[in-house]
Image 1 (cartoon, rainbow, N blue to C red):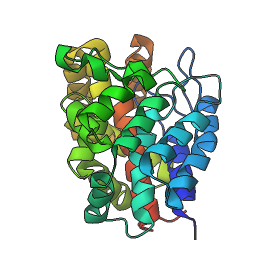
Image 2: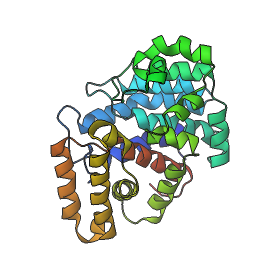
Image 3: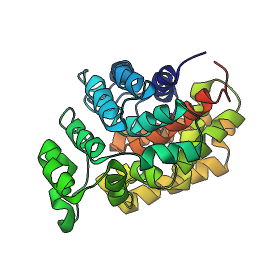
Image 4: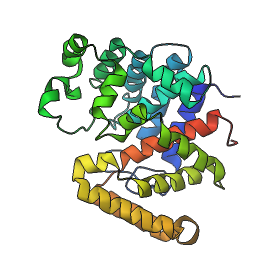
Length: 283
């Protein structure tokens, strides 16, 4: 039986192995400067931070260590958002992987956890949008320089996620009890076939439901809505089963346009972890 940390690492590996995942790196597609092997190395590098979460370390330091290890490859940011979901999930799995236990982990985060989260941005470049004027002092790109403001305002890591939830669906998971992650796990468990294929099909279903917030931040809400509408059409046509070539073509098109629904991939990784940890899938 695998440990929660091992399932976290495996979830990262299975997520990137799934194909086709429109716009994202998968085992058949690389981006210009970000390749499949970078994601493999990122998953292996993150393992120490996941083990910290498994053995009772606080969420913030475990996350920072996972990001530092992930960043020890030449591609840059591979799984920052996925780790922000996986670290609290692994921590919760020490007791029971349920939404009530997970919510207690999230509510138990501290100002020190928030400080570690900000320090994690010093290990790797992460694309983020401009903060509102009233939150400039808390811009995550400031890294450790924002820690005095965190301490002055007494903001925990959950507080920081709450401030970001409107425009970031990883942060939204934190304030909504990981509802989409648990739903993704159910879809993965109910699907047929190899796990990477189930992951890719679940990715498409998540993308069809809600515009990807990374796409919206990078390219605007119009493009994000267009991508979701296209994914919804493929999903409604059951294209994964009946017209895989159409999904492949959509994947290639998004890569060519530089449109990367990375937040949807983060949610897929979280769903894979939950399904693995609950032994809802066999591997």
